[in-house]
Image (cartoon, rainbow, N blue to C red):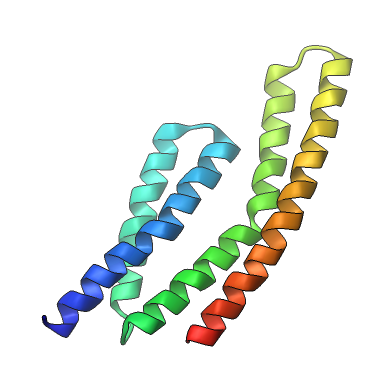
Length: 130
C-alpha cells in the first residue's frame, strides 16, 4: 500500500479519538448536541488533515496524544461551565442553588484529580513516542 494512503487512513482513524472526546466534553459543557456534532466533524476533518501532514504514524500518534492531553486539562473547566449552566437554569430556590454549587464543586474537584494526571500521562506518552 502506498505511504500516502497509509498516512491518510491512519490520520483519519487517529483523529476519531480526540474528536470524540471533544464532542463529549462540549456536549457536557453546552448541552447542545447539534453544535457538538458540528464540532466533532470539524475537529475530525481538521485533525485528519493535520495528522496526514505528518511523516509517519508515530508522529501522528504523538500528535494525537498531545491533543488528548490538552483536552484532559480542559475537563475541570468543562464541568465548571456545566455547573454554572445547571445552577442558573435548573434551580429555583437558594437551597437548590447552594446544593448544586456544592455538587458542582465536588464534580470539578473530581475532574481535576482525574484530568490532571491523565493529561500528564498523555503528554509523556506523546513525548515518548515522538
